[in-house]
Image (cartoon, rainbow, N blue to C red):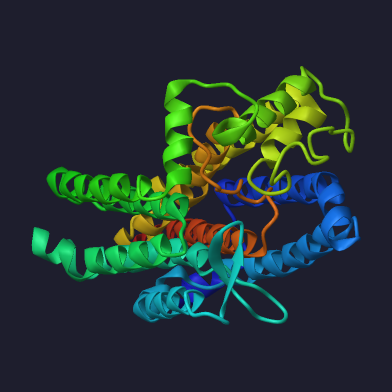
Length: 391
């Protein structure tokens, strides 16, 4: 069997593999282009350098793309042995963020570790670490003894601990994404619906209580549900985002011609870059982005459905959900469907940690796709060999 596997490794690239790779490449290139447009004004204002953000994003893109290629060549089954080690490292990094002098603050939150060459955001790495951890834990423990005790300890305890550490930054939106991604892993992993609903209820209680602790979060929620459309206060970002989308009309103002990026729309290069896409490329540009993410979801689900290995199927579902949940929430915020969250748009928004984590997720998905085709080809050729021997 091992000889058969080595013989077909070089050619084990499926349709899913190529489409996921191409979609990711297109989205990330769009991101580099849009950041180059959206960040010029803020780079000039704060750093006296219009290309400050784009230079760093290009470096992050090159490094992340290299990681994608490397990870796509590593057998995903090897992560089972590393999942506990990775989750412990992530917990340690999340704790370091809260230590004065180690954590870096920005926008009223402490979410980054201060390194001279790179400021990683551990909460981003927590997403992929939890996908690996839960996929491994379910395959080792829960699937053999599907009881609530095996789900609560230690998996739920680890999830709860990471949630608390992220809440302390504070970062509600990332915690919500993490819980939704974990639910996707639990659902695909055939965890009992009652157990999922029980965890979901606990998560909702914790999240709802946390949402109303800070005044600014209460203001955002009240402003959203009250339907206010004033151009100031809690609705300011949403209002300016809708102005940008409306200004773009059908075909947009053209690349680089956005007006909202000039001090009108906060975080134009990160949380609200989709609004700049709409302003500069219009409805057509935004529909292309949505279509690409829909394709990503489609082929991510295909990889998941084709994976016979329980651990790999859970991973494929979790990694696909990790990208798509964040994309759906970000776009929903930009068009005013949900309150402002602070989440970035995968592959497109500025942010080295986000890009690195999402590229790593795609690299693992690509490897799962390769392994699926590899197993199929080996089985097919073994069948042919057996038929030839019988003849």
